[in-house]
Image (cartoon, rainbow over all chains, first blue to last red; front, side):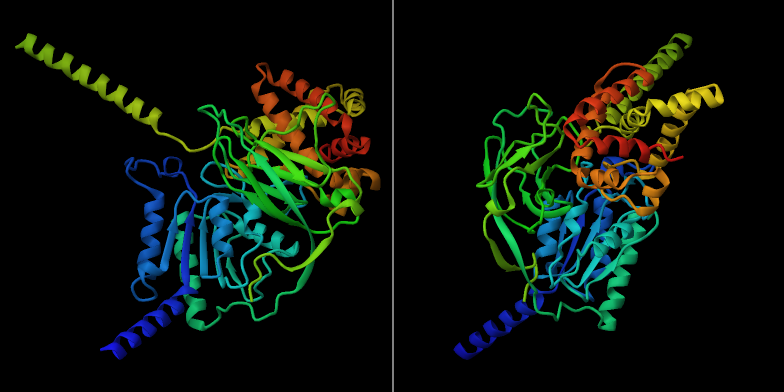
Length: 325
Length: 174
């Protein structure tokens, strides 16, 4: 009896560990009220339709419902967390996006969440364990190509990404992405990175955000991206009124001050965003403002480094973000 | 009977009206999760102000063709047409990288090209700021463009002077 219990326990643990690194995740960020085809009832919900497609195509033959994770109204916090989670084998993202490779004066590579906030930088750092990314959005492939050209999305040299250079229909494109994933799965093309993580040097800094206590009804507290020259180096979570947040970021060393400029960005130009106040601890950063000292920006601020490069904290040796061995 | 029919018609009318009111309420009360942001139209007007900053070019056009408005109005119209492709959502930015081809086409000096690239974050913050101020301003399109022009001049005073001259050249490429 005792032996049987032990065997069952070991078997159970082995099964769990086998499933643990095989999670399939669907993230959707669409407002159902704004994404309902004409002449449909108000109960018609795009998110429910996408969820049904995901379950129908992947269970019960390929995986179990327990091995699937679905998040609707996904934010950049959900996206970065799921892309970084070493237990996830494949992530499918569905939202509005736009992209272009034209050498235009306007950068049209945007991916928006259900509230219209740009979260394109959220795709920069999938973990080295992620094997498949289904990026369902219009012209999404242009953003993927831009990221790859800028050295992002490269923690796993075997990562397979499915995205389109055209306008796409959410349901049809998700079905296609799932089919594409299954094809690669059965062909044995999906695998985690086989490479050792490269060492990099970084400056470690702590940044503080103080969210105002008085938030009006039409104001939104949202997560705030911390960008160093378009590179996502940190993310303040959404938070609550009056909350004091502190996060550690790792900056890429720069030769000149502009290389370590920081942008605090909600992803949307709006008066409704309660950004809060920001302070970079132990480093002389100042917000870009008018001559009379009013910070410039609605939904994003620029912070310029005013000290000398030598005054920054000593660099540390670490591995690339989300590179897991 | 006529009285009865009349009453029925009246009732039907009432019911129809009530249904219409209810339907309208339902449509209006459909809650949207979107945050109100600067519209693409306002962003195009903000850029138009930028285009108009180079007054010398406007004068040249007036002297050559006898009208000023064509150049100033045609360009934003093209911009707006381009923005329709943006899948009607999202904040688009002024690009942080100027290709060699664009730089050559616009006649940018090296100093202007690097000034734009080095200050791209500040430029886009100004772009947000001006777009929203233009949106909030109640006036004609021409007045809004005039406001945008003034704001670009005011707010860019803290930036390298090559930034604005470079931007005006880039957005004046035909």
